[in-house]
View 1 (cartoon, helix red, strand yellow):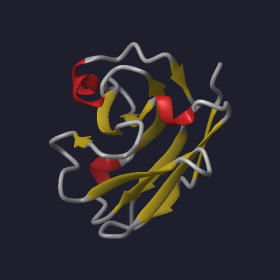
View 2 (cartoon, rainbow, N blue to C red):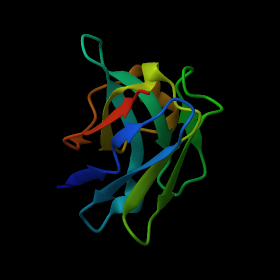
View 3 (cartoon, rainbow, N blue to C red):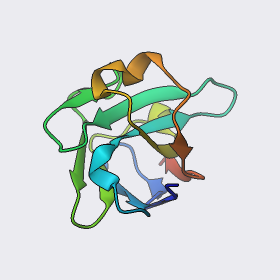
View 4 (cartoon, helix red, strand yellow):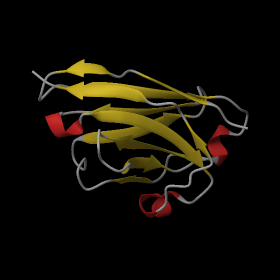
Length: 125
């Protein structure tokens, strides 16, 4: 069983930056690909980014490429999402997820094994 707890959300102005964290329980953290999804009001959940178990591979959704960066620290059982050049359309609840599915397949699959409860990011002036 893996429990995920997100933190770091909040209100930020357009063009600003924010870093989200996701702390995971369990002793097999490196066995899981870890990623982020987001869901804006009235919209479907959207894939944001994923990182492989040992951190060698990362993939991003088209809307965040070049602005967001995912990383992980397996010693701390934590995955991060650095978000730069934020736009109002980035406003959403951001969810952390864990699954043993290969990272390259995450963008087309939403049935991850474990989910956090989400953290709200609001981009507004």
